[in-house]
Amino acid sequence: MNALKKIAASARPASVVATFAAIFLAGCSALPQPPVRPVLYDLGPGQLAPAAEQPPLPALALADVQSAGPVDGSTAVHYRLAYADARQLRPYQSARWSQPPAQLLEQRLRAVLGERRAVLRADKALIAARQGQAPTAVLRVELEEFSQIFTSEQGSTGVVRLRATLVEPTPTGEQLLGQRLFVAQQAATSADAAGGTRALAEATQQAAQALAQWLEQQGR
Image (cartoon, rainbow, N blue to C red; front, side, top):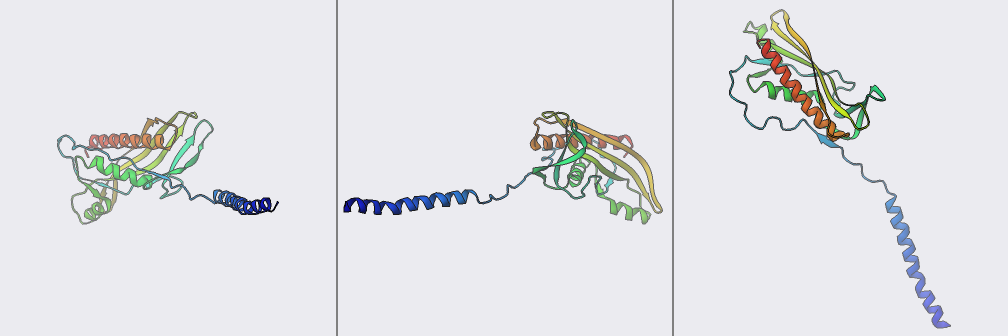
């Protein structure tokens, strides 16, 4: 009998330890998890090989690209559900651009336009015009749309819409040389942020190339 009591007594601590261990593990699982960092996207590396030799074009000044988006400086990756309400611009929670879209577009424009010409800062061109030097045309670009638009739950398209205005600075102001709206669309390969950002990168490249061709047609 005494032996049975000793066995029972010696067993109690082990069961108590097991109980406390289970409670501790349950409490750990209930602790808040650290937030998941959003995936960062950009427009890709751009052209990886030198462009074919072509006659150079006149120098051009590119002003800072402006954004007509709802939040200036936002790095959110946006999408629209056209089949529900296309007026709502929605952000992905787990995806971000590495920089605001207007800055990414400006970098890509400088890269594409710079393949055949010198691309200057707009302020330098304005100062030179005020000093009576030979004018350099200034390109002003406003980014009006930069989002992934879903036409169905699985089908979406990256849409880039920008308005380009070409002016020539003079000592007394600016002379309008031309203005055009560019819209580029690229089907997304997947219905998520990865597919949307890839489609937007390709659409941006298309828009930049179309803009470069337009400028050449303008003799600039």
